[in-house]
Length: 128
Image 1 (cartoon, rainbow, N blue to C red):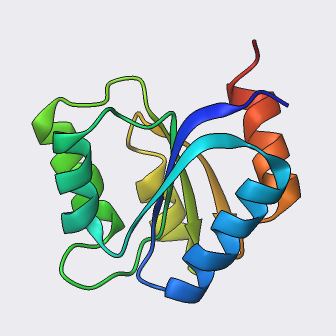
Image 2: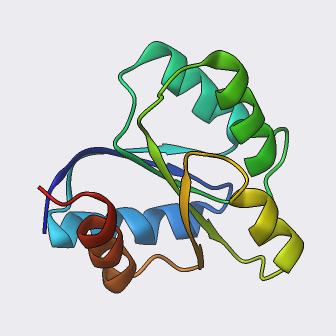
């Protein structure tokens, strides 16, 4: 599996972020993992630091939800090459369809993050 330079986890659920970071660490899947509890924090991180290779993004969060984050990313013009995987508890078709309307969104999974999801994303979207 290709190792990512940086993964950003955007989710207000601390337990999910913690478990996701453990799985990423156990797989040695990334040099760096950052976490943001909502879209506002994620936007601030992206403006201040190098763009991640991949963002695992939840939809429902306080202050700025996943779609607000995606809209902000469009407006900012930053991170043109980032790949975003929606990782959410939402199984609503409307939200899935809306997510795929953004050019950065490459996949959509239900929580939790698993080794299989990371492997699929690496193999499908990051072939060396």
